[in-house]
Image (cartoon, rainbow, N blue to C red; front, side, top):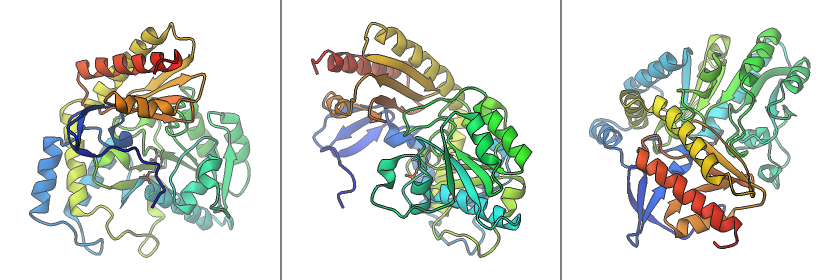
Length: 387
Ligand SMILES: *Cc1c(COP(=O)(O)O)cnc(C)c1O
């Protein structure tokens, strides 16, 4: 179907931060399939884990215990300090699980019409509940009536959450630690810890959508760890499988006990194949110190971009959190994506004016330098009208 305005290029293979198209042209990948391939393309350890698992067992269903899934759940709980995991196949599904947990948690407290606080500019997925939670009119358009039970507040506004949370129907807050699709919007440093306190005071759930920010991307395993808090619910997907479809809804305390037999499910979720791949992803990130690498490399790239673009008045802001990087212009710049492609570089533009870079965590110093040089040249040519 035509639901994607696709670019006219077909990639045949990749290696690390590089892709080759069917014509043999080479591209530097500063997007990682939208924060999915954190270990780059064709990572040998992930490939080996998938191949080994495929020789033994792909799928048995969740009617039986799944050894690899249990190992993966234990690892995610150990890394996050949380208690239980539900596995699914995408970010939207992970958020669906979170929303169902919030509603059932509310009903168990006697709230007949439970509501979840969500924010402007957010993105939570394309299923009916998650598009309704999403704070973007373009995502809603044509799909009304929206799923009810969401209360919207501005992003990075603690008081707005505090006020909304005083309503008796509110059972949870669902936010991204950094708004990704919304334009790499990095909130004030105390945002999540302030939300944690509101949720504790009110006895409601703090649910963090870490589908894009998780898996080391921001320089911690999970972005909320920068603020020394633990959420009640956290959703993961994108970088968890490095390209195999896997999502996870991680919960702790009361939130981890809400879903009981018969209340939720997934045929494929956490099957042996995807769990083996995700375990290899965790092992590799840990062994190669890629979380710390994302922190130092991301900070350096932001500084390099700031220095290199200081003379360009059309660049209004450069920001980042680990290897989530945003360069905001004073004008719409979706054309940059095609111009970059023609120059052998994969980037993204989101929220109309923000160049979004989500490079793989395995980037070498030289590749990082090339991305900065090539993106700056592209932006300078574009704003000078020369591209
Ligand atoms: C990509 C994304 C989703 C949706 O994930 P899908 O796998 O496309 O369903 C949800 N939340 C955030 C923050 C995302 O970046």
